[in-house]
Image (cartoon, rainbow, N blue to C red; front, side, top):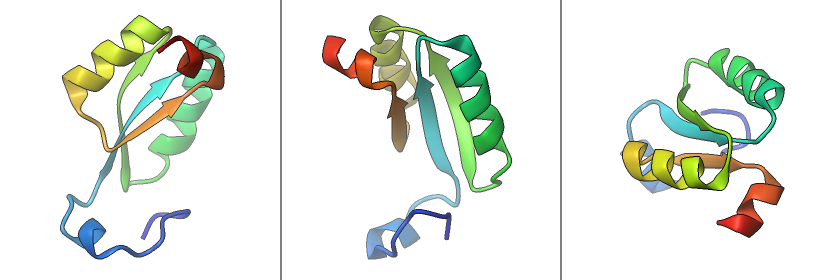
Length: 77
């Protein structure tokens, strides 16, 4: 089970990979998060977004399991 996740019966029925969209206005932050997450074979970064409009578009388009959203972007969405 990936680090940070607690056991949940419904998790067992999901695909083996947790699908993620990374949203941050700093390109270096997005790169760092993507690089870190790509080291875990149980995580797939589907897309990145640099602003709130892109974030909404990427989430609708990719339907991820998890959205990593910069706190400042959350206020605008």
